[in-house]
Image (cartoon, rainbow, N blue to C red; front, side):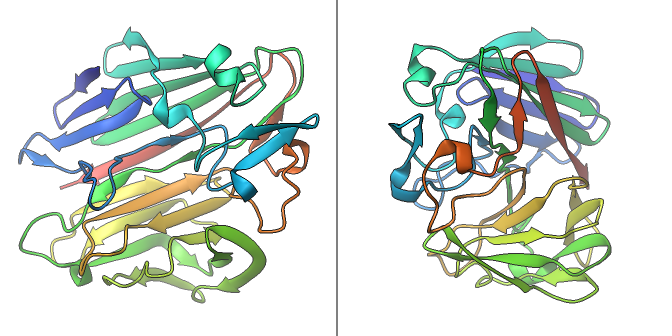
Length: 293
């Protein structure tokens, strides 16, 4: 079921299935800014990645010798989240561990999602609580996609990605969806990543070693932009689906953990994580997205 929150500038819808952002409309123009999903291109819109990001070696992991099968990006995106209510300009959802999740991931948890409007900014907060009796290790990340170009008068080359300060991103080398362990610099001391329709032919670009506070998708001739607050995230990925002559959307994805290395042991205790929570401990993060039209 979809739930709506709005203010003077934005109207936002969130689907309780996956607690997934479903629509972001600029009220002045009526323009839908969020990618609306297309099975022929990419069917999702803005999935929550939990309890891990990316792929698992052999599509599984082990905990205390027992094997658990797992698809890409975890299971939170595919489950119904409980709607907790609308508090003024914020929608709140909760996913609680259950027999269904324990069969996939043998740890008790509560995952809370809050979507709050603050002027032209949408702030999505994710909070994880360890409700079990043993340590909870998990990965987590964001994966929102936005329509590109913003209108039919522009093409991909009319846009650029712009950091607020010069950066030298270190890109993780990936083969077949898995980390190789290698890295390379994407550019040196530059604020701008040019955009073109072939830039994701080799899959996503995973950038680390960033000190920037924001990364903006900018329409060069008008200045219209979508700004992502990436400060504090160890990794920021950019991605779009390949297979069409042109891009239809762009995902900007702050992650707190990564996919497996190709030679990963598969043991959950060995997997790098966003956090390792003691029983009763809580952890949270937030992504602020600002729409300037």
